Image (cartoon, rainbow, N blue to C red):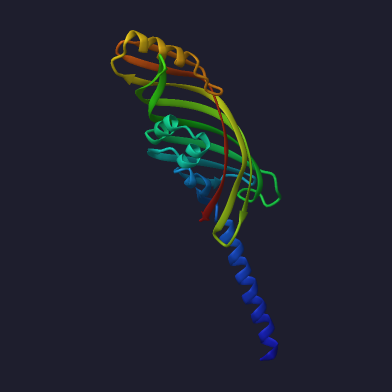
Length: 244
């Protein structure tokens, strides 16, 4: 009887180990949510699947329902200007984006494990509603503007992914610079006097948006700000994932 115990225990241990290895080998899929995005009022969900020994493909969907600016109170405290604070209070933004991605894992464990380099493309649409303020002969005037900007960018991201448990993983998007183009417009419709048209036209001409070119049209019925040109950004975040 004693002679049989050791072989039985070894058999049980081997079977359990093989079952665990087989279970892990079959986990070629991960669904993840970006925790950092939640702080920015974004819902960001990614699906990743291993398609080779060191290669995986992924698709990300990001959604931010139109709402107040993230960290609005912190921005207001930094600005400390009553007129700008009122403008921030009435500004609403939202976005939707889709990001396909291909990853190459450099470590010996292969796809879904360790450090990786990823190539990605992001197709995004941003919406905004804001009361645009300008100065007309020493008086602050406001024109309500709204519209949409569409962007198309591509980039390279560096990251690392670890297993925290049998089916739980942590994915760190370390740095993902991207660059591309934008196209869209913001429109405000309201009656403008000749003086208001000149003042608004001058301020829109002086508007400086980083990495982006703008042109405008102003007439007696309102104004349109056209946004077209380069667009740049950086991807980063920390995701919790479920493997299956």
